[in-house]
Length: 399
Image (tube, one colour):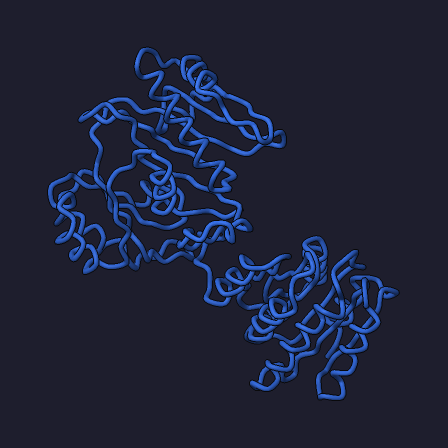
């Protein structure tokens, strides 16, 4: 699941016919000033300025400013850019037009085990949180789309009447179209408002979670996913994510500053198992990583290069269970190429490598790993007969 920030989230909704305010996302006051010269609405409208980061409670943190003229929006942007909130540095601000309105509503679409669910309420903003019983649901099976009649019924059940019931039904239908077509796992607009100028429904906010692994199907996804762990993604992490989006199978990489035990395990389950084993034995992780689904060797090579570039590492754990279909020799070929490249660049000095693996062509793969000793690598290789976490014990006990 990949989180998308408000700006690109509203861009996706606009693509599917949902009304959103005019907005710009900027990284500096100078950029906002230039955009103000090219966009008349910035000079004529009342504005809202918000930190465009994956942060909760932005209003309480002073990172939401409302009812601004353009000069005040420039001042708010200058104040927010560069501000440190925990481990996050504010690097972007979204400036949008204020939409005069009286009532606020709620609409969301989410994935379920059975298919999907459309949620609608005739209250919104903070009010919906304390009146969750007013949220009405339409449950859909996998592959099922809502009919106009079912959406209008949902709208009326939620308390909408007259022309507004039809408008909310149409809004919910567009939300589902966006959700379904963009491989979303969750979309939420809170609040949806009735614009005073023309009585059209407008999305004032966007919470968007997409299936990140579906990026290859969406060439127009020209935005970065938001980090989900309290900081921006590093350059190395983004490069691995870019590879992951292009391949069959998967490669993942997250840096953990300050650790000395690097991880390069096969499989999502094994990656967690090995990481837990390191921490349980008092070790310090330098990263999280995994490759699975029989990825191409070049993708595993890129992942290996990132692991080998981690500062201050003493051990690399190349662990894995017994694979069902991942070609051990092929994926080890990518790892070996990554090790050789790192060594040629002066990396891996005083770094011990610990390997444990089983699966298709494991003998050829393990033999190729053992041969690295002759090239000067400090490498220790074990087959399927060695318990999975024994290599963690050996690594942490090694001098």
